[in-house]
Each structure stands twice: as C-alpha cells, then as structure tokens.
Length: 368
Image (cartoon, rainbow, N blue to C red; front, side, top):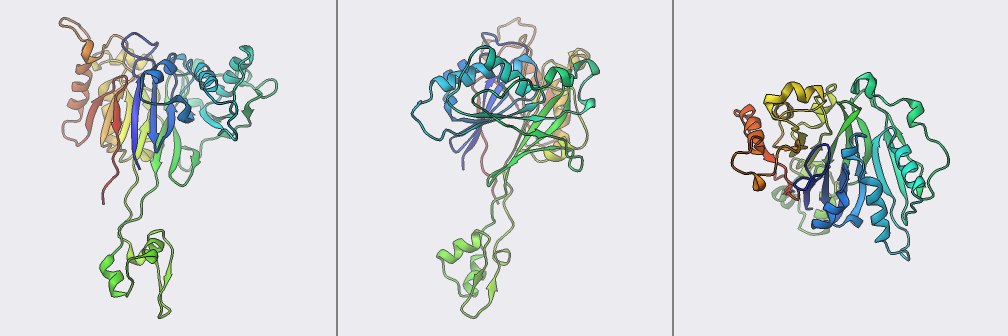
C-alpha cells in the first residue's frame, strides 16, 4: 500500500508568493487526509498533483487563521466540483479543537454556502495548560448556537484519555489515529497516524513438515485464522507466522513551543516521519518561545526523544525564502535551519529534511 506526504504550504502567518500557509496532505491508496488548511490551500491543491475531491478527512491543529482560514472556501469549491447526481456521497470528517464546529457553522451559514456532501466536526476538548489564560476560548465564545448547517451531521466531543495522555480520534482496519497536546498561544494539537502491523511471513518449512501445501490454507493462516489438519490437529497462525512487521507511523505537530505530558513522545516513538515547526532560527529562540513557536534545535530535541527516522522542518517565517529563490546577500538562509537541526542531531540516525511547497515524501513499507 503506497503512502506519501505532500506539503501544500510551509510558511507561517500568511500565504506569500513563495510559501503557502500551513497545509499538508497524507495520501494512501487514493484517499487524502488534509492536515491544516491555511488561506489559499485550495489554490495550492490546484497546482499540485492531488485532487481536492479525494479529501475524506481534515485535521486542524489549532484555531489560528493561518491554519484554518482556507477550510470554508475549500469545502465550497469541492462542492462546486461535485456531481449533483452522485448518490451516497461520503461524509467529510473534520477534527479540531473546541470552537471549530461553531466557526464552520457560522461561516457557512452567514455566507449562505450549501454543500452537496455531508460533513461532521469532531471537537477535541483542550486542557487548561495548553496555552496561557488569555489564549483559552471561553465556553460562551465557542458555544454552539442555532440548528446544524443543512449538510452538517452531529459530531463527537473527544476528551483526553488520562491513561494514555492522548485523544483517540478513530480506528479502522488500516489505521489508528490519535491526537496529543501541545503548548502554544492557543490550545494546539499534534496528530499521530499509525498503520496497523502487517502479519509476518509464513514459516514455509514448518508448514511443509506439517503437510500443508501452498494454497488457500496458507492465506487463511496469514489472515490470522486457525487451520485444522486431516489428523484433527488445529494449527494456529501464531505457530507458523514470523514476527509481525511494524506499520508505518506519521506524526504531524501543530504550532508549539513544547509538548505536554508523556503522551506525545510515547505516541511518536519510532515515527517514520515527524513533521515539526521551526518558525525561527536558533538565534531567535527567545522570540520564538515568546510567540509559542519552536526553533530547529527544539524540533530536533523532540525528534531525538521520539527516535524518529526522519524530521521534517516546516512552518517557516516568511523571512526564509525557499532555497531556489535564495539570493547572494540574503540575511536569512533557510538552509541554515537545516544545519542547526543536523548539528543538534549529530550523534543520531535522524535524517533532517526541509519542507518546501509541493514537496512529496514517499513513506515506504517497513521491511521484516
């Protein structure tokens, strides 16, 4: 099963001619999951090889505009390009902090925007320590008012599971997706997408000794089901399968100056790809932290603690132009951000990558 990540916007604060606002897409087997949706994301999608109509799930890390303002417009444009005669359209599942449901309902309602497909907003209830007091939205401000939008389906309110220090968003046959808490100027979240482990290889020599020939019974054992031999002996799959092959793991951090609790590091342990913001260089660390952001060295510390395979830096201040647009004499060199992270990871096996708009990173299957 193929899996890759495409960055649609790698800039902070606002979209610019050289960097879009925050957005990335995780694609697997034709299905697309969108993480954050800053202003102009739909235009970035049009420039990419991705299809907006394939987006089935949206994850919003926090309610700052450079991660959110593009969502109402994107939903409307997807609707405009939807065949009105198509039946049984899937519901777009949207996850994000408390207040997101109210934001979409009011925005779509005030603009008279009708959608041809249903959507549901599942809200994560933040904890009081995720932001300074002035960054916490009151229940009054985020309270739902009025009826649901005509195309809105009831969503869930998801609370922190204290035992795992995480939020279980959903689990299906392929993935389990959880969120974790981050500290920012407003409550922020990260997301961990974990593919289920694949069955290990069959111990073919043992199967031959048992008298089993290649065929349907092999498939049954591979699927984890028992097989009864002619002798009456029951062979369990656990007897004839090698160790399971770990599934892939992708972790996407929202804006933050620190993680909260042990949940993020446990969830992201061994991540194939860990996407972390590096808004400003290490020399601006005090300013970055004051604004709830991170530097390359701070991102590297998280990647090291998680034993991630690859750290992808993103969400750069617009002062850092992409390498292709860098000119001699420019004071702010985005390549320096990569060097700072690599210096902090010198004695580790973590690979560092600078995100750029439209960069696609394949995530290969893990091998036994």
